[in-house]
Length: 423
Image (tube, rainbow, N blue to C red; front, side, top):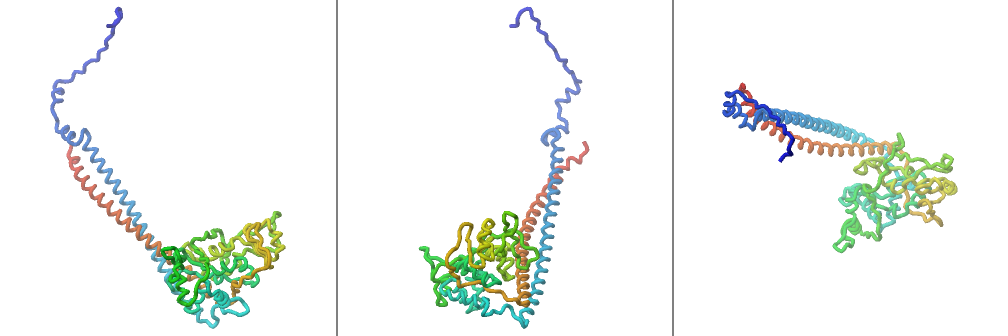
């Protein structure tokens, strides 16, 4: 109950009385309302038509974008095939040029007895007859250039001692002493598959003497008596810095050591990695990433090893030495803090000394260019295959989207028919 004496106010809302005829019409269903109800409510038919129109425009836009993408792949393929044809022509022209150089009176390098040239290096390696390098050297002696085509040795680049040359005989001996016989006779392979081809094992993990390099040795009456190093170029961490500008040997642009006063140490001759002369054929594209032997093999063996004129110069430069140093009078610092002392145990396998032959240089430059052209062609063929796959994928997606667009147009046509009737 409400408290007494308090008045309650009631507010009334006026009733909107409509025309009786209109009230009567409310109970009747007009044709328009029935049609709208059947199409999902008031305005449903219009919304569905608008949605169909929007969807068709969206699909049309997608088709245009996919068509442009498809054309881009086709243009890329056309360009790559044109590049491949140009490389083919350049390779043929260079082959003709090389054949002329090869038939010239002055052949490639001739080996001299008083310098450690190619044949002398082979003889030094063959003295280690029970080594892996000795077996490879003997096979090469028997079979010549065909040895590199054997499945077992196809991925073998060579033995370290034969892959570089050094102008100075004394420096060659010092570098060989620094590396040691084991590293000088190491077998260099392009990739890990080439390394695994050199040796096989039985179920107990023992070496299979009838397979790999051991089997090859047995076939020519040699036994590999000790273990050996196989260097996988693609697994080495390469030098990725700059090279000395306009240098045909692609020497590495390493920062020279500096004393606290900012001057270069007296007697500093350079970095060992840059003192190796490499066959132009191996300066580029030895690995699938395009690196040559200087950035991979010799940078891994020497890193930033510094070369000094005398031991005294080397010792005075100790604050500047970060990756070891050697001197021409036999001093060796392996790493900072580790000095090689005592009588010099000379390694009997040394780097050869290059000969000065203009014809050889021209031929070597042509070999380097041929190596580069073939590498570029190989990469172009890979790009063509990749682009063909992308194009086929784009063609498939374009076809699926086109089918969807055609279905959408058909549905839109059916939906728009009622809308053409006047309201």
